[in-house]
Amino acid sequence: MFKSIDNSNYVQYSKPVFDSQASDTENVVDSNIQTDTPKETTNLIMRYLENQAKNNISSPYNVSNPIWTPAFDNCENVKVLDAQGNVVQNVEFKKDGNKLTEEIFVKSINGSTVNKTIVNDGNKKSMELIFRNKKGEITGQENRTYEKLDDDRAISVHNGKTYKISGLSGDVITVEHNSQKKVIDLAKKIQPTLDTIENEPTQKQISQEQREFLINSIKKLSGDIIMKFDEEIDQMVMLDTDEYEGFYRNDNGVRKFKISQKVKDDMTVIHELGHAINCINSEGNGDNRVLWSNNEEFAKIREVEMNNFKNHCKNDSIKKPMEKFIFDDFAKKGFTTYAVAQKDARDEEFAEMTGFINCMDVDWINERVPCLLQFMPDSTQIVYKKNQELF
Ligand SMILES: [Zn+2]
Image 1 (tube, rainbow, N blue to C red):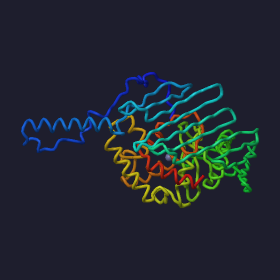
Image 2: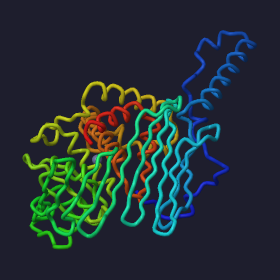
Image 3: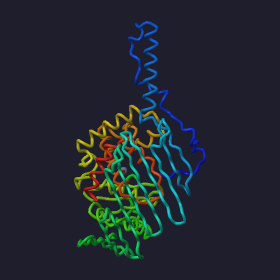
Image 4: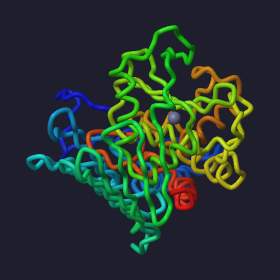
């Protein structure tokens, strides 16, 4: 989400705020303490306090509140520190003429790191994403570039594979890769009427401007992602709302991508595409969806990571952006059971990582992704491995 420039948000960089010390009561001294002699009692209490202090300081879950600083326009840099003052999350924006840069760094709880650099410069975009293990060895790397050559043509490269895109001045676009050629008529995918934000149909007809908005949101993507979109999505739907919103829905076997006119970034578009990819059965809707993210390995690892996070992180400003991947208060979110909520939470993690791994638009501060990467490194790696097969 965009953070508005509001000075009340800023925390002095030199004075990080830690939330977790006082409320951490995990290592409570057991009750037989009362039968000990005063000296032993003192020793036990000391040991307890030392342990607690040590646990608090060394716990990777003990982090500062996010520290926001202004970058430019409505973008803000954000930094999160651990108890020793080391940077564990850093999102930094730079503007140099038309050239915008976003640098993301995350050090996760298991010592692995993530670096992502996005550059947007006029008709050119690029991203480099590097995953390293705790020894600093590279465990995964993604490179993307995109260049708009003229009104009609663009070229995108993903990990050395080149995609030529043409037809951008109209609605029928062609993506060429090696000897393969795919012609996609985006106008044919437009649903002629709008849907409400509650995913109900309306009688309102889509305007020419809204039609173009939907088509443009796909046209500007990389060649491999446009092809994936064509495979996974039958209809593009304009939402009748001023809210910033996007959905993937399967309406009676018709796979629909729905966005509002507020959605300008490729992160949201690819996140919704991620939901589409994650849904394995083509008719699945609601509770009948068969999701890739329900596989046992992913579900199990996520459960462990989530429980550790819930038990050890006491910082509300860090827990809040993680809600979307945890749905702990499932009833409040409208889920009937914890299990049903978890199905959605897993789906959200898959979609969010698919967006993060592939998006290359600067202009979007998303607090959720750095938190997810920091506290759930093993499950996010599983999604990354799956993504390597997809794109
Ligand atoms: Zn989602």
